[in-house]
Length: 128
Image 1 (cartoon, rainbow, N blue to C red):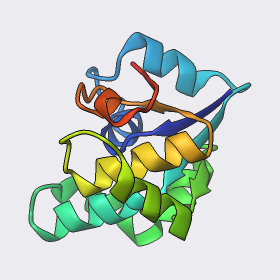
Image 2: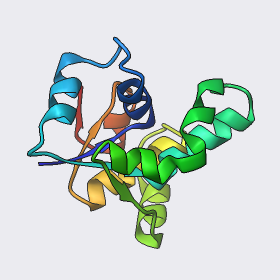
Image 3: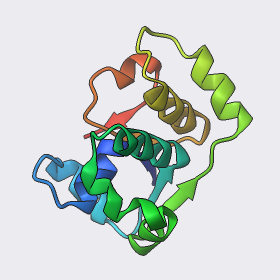
């Protein structure tokens, strides 16, 4: 099965954080699953780091692609179809990072691993 990790799920996985649910941990640990990390997550992490909100990101940002690859994740680029779909999604959830991830999940036929309760209002299937 194909899954896209929300940014918080990625960070919690990398830090072995206890907020990562048992179901999410099982999905990520299963070698039969294809796990993707969006370029939008790199953008979100870098943006928050630049604003002083994620100081620990200094460990992963210099080689973000290498960290993703080392974990066995696949990087998902953002294309024009993703961007158009993100703008056309229903709902009032306005976070641009979440909207891009939702659009990618829908267009690439993946469930989004996310704790965010607002995401399903965008029409995407989530797992947590």
